[in-house]
Amino acid sequence: MKLHVSGDVTVPGDKSITHRALMFAAAAEGESRLRGLLPGADCQSTASVLRALGCGVPVLPADGSEIRVAGRGIAAWTAPVEALDCGNSGTTSRLMMGLLASRPFSATLTGDGSLRGRPMRRITDPLAAMGARFREHGAPDRLPIEVIGGPLNGIDYRSPKASAQIKSAVLLGGLGAGVPVSVTEPGLSRDHTERMLTALGERVETSETGDAVNLRLTPSGRALPPLDMAVPGDPSSAAFLVALALLADEGELRIRNVCVNPTRTGFFRLVERMGASIRFENERLAGGEPVADLLVAPAPLRGIDVGGAEVPAAIDEIPMLAVLAARAQGETRITGAGELRVKETDRIAALAQNLRAIGAEAEELEDGIVVRGSDRPLRGGIRAFHDHRIAMAFGVLGMRPENDIQVDDRAVVDVSFPGFWEMLERLGAR
Ligand code: S3P
Image (cartoon, rainbow, N blue to C red; front, side):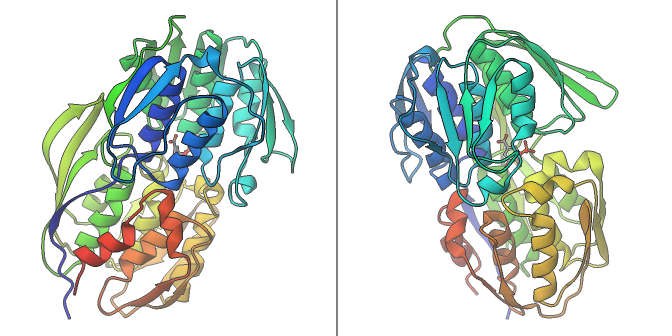
């Protein structure tokens, strides 16, 4: 039996951009119009947190059709009556900490079991240095955390990690408080916050020294204007379909309207090094972001070494890359990816355990994983550990006709890619 993958598809809106579009629309003065928002559970969490702060954010429509957000400015946000439930969404909790740090009220952020297991001092430490106060109501460094907002001072923060969540929390803290801030990170993490701030008329300067990147926001003090934007497709979701097309025996897949911001396209560059060819067609700028249609066809893959500087632009796609490596020729070695241990689950452990459970060869490293490829049938059950990307990565591998792979928690994909299983079935109908 052969796997034939062809078609012309779109993926749901970008998760990172959707969170930010909702937050900026809720902080703006005037009516924003937003199209193509990701209706996944993580972004619904951001919408409901903003609603609990008194912002008129509607339920995100399943088809990405336009919503209007009536913003009254961040100064009109009101104290929530209950803890703000961020669900599974790290971005919701961490970026909201930045925005809440300057509000003249207290708000407690919490989340599901997975989110309550993730570190938060990486965010509260720089915000505390700006003058915000926090009360940890659970385990140290973990949600639930009460943000006791107030006036903030500026900061020149040197971040130990290339993390868009850390960088964005500091920038949003500075924006809300109206104080200049700068963040230096060891390599540029995804830059959607800076791009949107610039598009909204704020001054963000970027400079590079050696390997480090510095971002400096000097808030204008003016009210944020409303947004009118279309969110492009999520390259992290497109990565799963690209992997499916690469694993196929025949066909050709076109994925339209994908965000190809260079801070997000690391996975595409890495699979090209493995032997794939991914064509970017119809490249354009939309809503301040580079966008393209991707064209991809099956290709034999070989193992590669992936290290340090390449990781940030592919961080959310490493699960798919490691799983693809099980079908490549030779060994793939991924290092410098210790951050994977504190994502929705410990992704290094989850990958190694699941790869071995289906008969693939994988070795866990402290900061990465080594996978040895083969073409023998891979069979067995996958534990998703409540992680959408673990579930989807193995779901793709399960489409190979010789494999027989069952994922225990299929519903978890709704976090970032509602309709994922239906699309997989449709595209890979054998
Ligand atoms: C995100 C930043 C990344 C990424 C996450 C989304 C964002 O996390 O893994 O899925 O939208 O800012 P880090 O900033 O912790 O690397």
